[in-house]
Length: 350
Ligand code: PEP
Ligand code: MN
Image 1 (cartoon, rainbow, N blue to C red):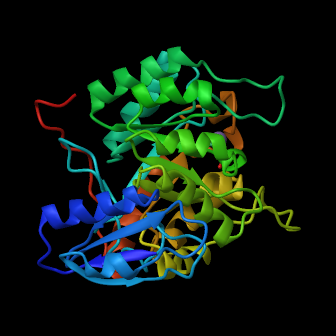
Image 2 (cartoon, rainbow, N blue to C red):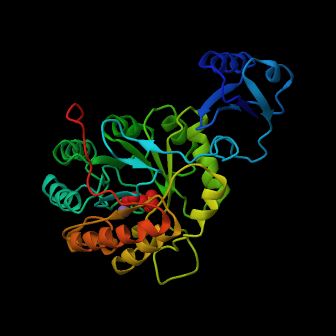
């Protein structure tokens, strides 16, 4: 159910409706829009009795949301969600394209700084790097953990880039949330509902990667898990799905971008690195992602990919990253977007 408030409804009226919903034993999710605020209701098993609600001051109408995902749906919030990073000009989901770049894993301070310097110089606003790695083999490099988080925090203060890193379980989530600006939840964890709920209780943006065989609805239901706990800052990321095709590691499903945008207000990025698994495919698919209307790209970059401890074959060289920035920057205006170069951070913010 969704309570649509009148355009002129006051904050007090909105609060009173939320309290009324909570008194009924449900959860209220006020989602302010450009024209009016809508209040999503979750926690109800069946229909909520709309009688009383419609009579409360400031209420325009009460409508049933028929889709399985509610808070992620455009029925609840028509305008695109734009995620902002306090004290910086970086956004995800607005006019500006978001570019997240960095190695698959943080391997050492020197490696991370070498790559960070190069991607920052090419204009990246977000730096990625795995501290905790969800590897297919238990014998493969599992990440530097806390040490990597500390290195990334140093990178943020040195270059200004906001930090994106993955939480692989409830234990790592707490530490990741302390250090990162965006908490990544990986493809293999897309249906780890306890992790999604824990991330939903935090107030930090969550970058949710599509599961290896997830449908659009399953993908949005996972976003819904995060949002149902009150964290509405979810960024979706298409990273390729498993198919019979064997020319690439995964099949990058760019067609999900317009499909998601039709039904959801959440931003959606594309990861052509995991989506193809091949360095030579990353740039063409990054161009295609931007042309498709994605809100940005996430790419793996390494200055010495042959020595990378994870995902070397799909990591692009820094000079290829610089070309990618130039090319997607040229495509952006054709699809009504622009590519910011570099991040501006207020002096008061680190
Ligand atoms: C990653 O971003 O390095 C990663 C492990 O991605 P995914 O969860 O999409 O495989
Ligand atoms: Mn990787």
